[in-house]
Image 1 (cartoon, rainbow, N blue to C red):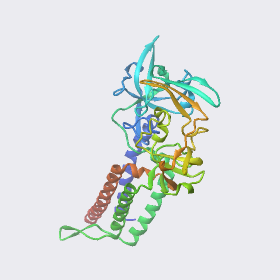
Image 2: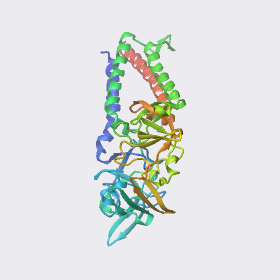
Image 3: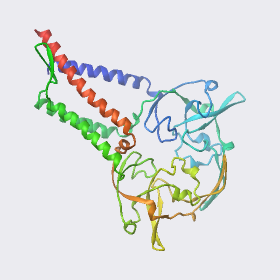
Image 4: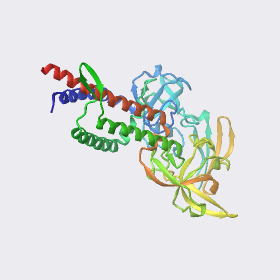
Length: 405
């Protein structure tokens, strides 16, 4: 190896040391956001740092309250909250905002809520419950105040590292891609020795480099794919985990249009909008992350032909035994909702609600469709780093050459 290669390796080690050192030091204080309950302030995959804070110093408020890490949903269900609406298992960390607090007999109690959730944490109670029929009540005054010992820490405000959590979810896939990319790069760099800049009569001149063109072409290909994803409605991002394990959040789904008669039971379909359920009595507050402008990706579990038109019953693979539309609103007023669960409350949506049938998926790539601004920033940054690396590499070679003279 040349001296310049050793210098580049040393620089790389130093950079990784400074990047990894904080992660190692603050490992117990790092948390990755799961789900979209804290959007738009925190997104799925964001990395946050949590610090200790005295319970008395934790701030409360719908807009400016502290965001805290809660040990698990059992602190709500143990005080009467309905477990069916706390879908995370016990000891699963919850990151929500403190909206109210109170001091009782020397102990602080906190009321919490996800910024993107319509309901206050722990505010749903069971009125009647059986296997086939239940009645539930949502009341803002039923929110559960958790004790101070349920709080693991407070998220540092105005600090987050976007998307770093995807390294945890797709670490193996990313590692394989990086290893293959490095091998290809090494192959080309050995085959075609390049110099982006060379000294001639005291001047620096830009010259052609095959490896530079290869790396730049990769960036252009990624940019082209981004444009294709944005403009083609057949490519959609899986927005949640309702279809686990078949489809995971941020998988890219590739769909095709089918004649309604050809859609089979078991097909995964794209439903145009949740209003097909809301308009038939399903409480929108239960799908607070599904506004009418959004779409739903669920599986067809039954179909029927009514008056010459096909209708479909759907369900998320991760929805347990519940089919879409098994809840009905009984009483609704601001801050209060009484609704029922009934196995006979089945909604068949019309054929015009179906946009397409999912044929393929590509893991992780769906992220690129919904985050195009960030992706463009990454592509431009990579292109700049390629130029900087080659320019720096050539400068190191020139410095070493001058030293050896």
